[in-house]
Length: 117
Image 1 (tube, rainbow, N blue to C red):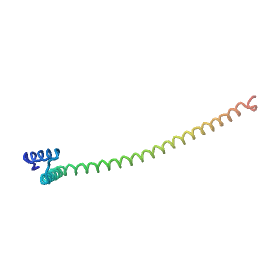
Image 2 (cartoon, helix red, strand yellow):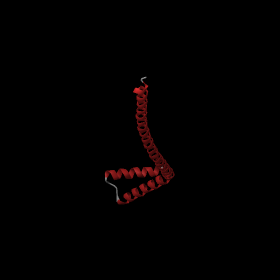
Image 3 (cartoon, rainbow, N blue to C red):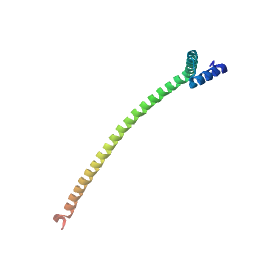
Image 4 (cartoon, rainbow, N blue to C red):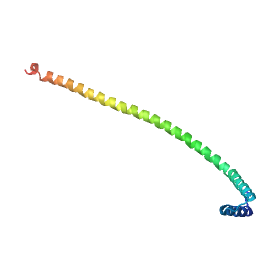
């Protein structure tokens, strides 16, 4: 940055006059030129960092999209797993009912009147 102590002193003086309301039109133009110079130099100094931050923000956005997609896939798999568990519970309940019915049938046959002798 090519900003000097003299430039800073000029800026301070002009800003003080601006605040007190005594800035002349030529001084106002000089202040505007100094401010434009500061902004241009800051922009030039900050440009590489801003580019890096934009790239980083792009990387973060891409990673966020990847993680959100993965989360959606995981949610779908969890729903499928929950449905499988529910189906398995229904199957086991039906299995238990049918087994009990079969065992009742065996009990009737084994304990029926034909086997009493």
